[in-house]
Image (cartoon, rainbow, N blue to C red; front, side, top):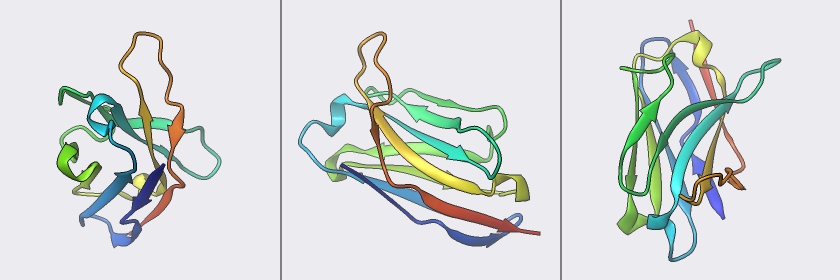
Length: 117
C-alpha cells in the first residue's frame, strides 16, 4: 500500500514537500515515481527514482522539483520549490519492480496540490 500526503494550498513561488509511505519489507527493491493529473488533462510522469537512487525529472519540473527516497522509512519524497500555478494537480505516488517491461502497478490515493497566483 502507498499513502501519499503533504498536499495543500501554496502560493506561486513557494515550496511544498510531498511524502509517500509504503508498507511492506521490500520497498528498497522498487522503483518509485510521482505522477500528477491536472483538471482536464492526462496523467503525466513528474519524477522517478530507481531502487539504486538514479533519478529522472520531467522537463517541466527540472531544477524546481526533487525526488528522493529514504529506504529506512519506506518513504519517497517530492520536494517542490518555486511552484507555479500550472503545477496545480492531484499528485500520485506509484511503484513498480525494476524488471524490464514492468509497469507502475501500485498506486497511492493522491494528494491535491493547489498553487495560487
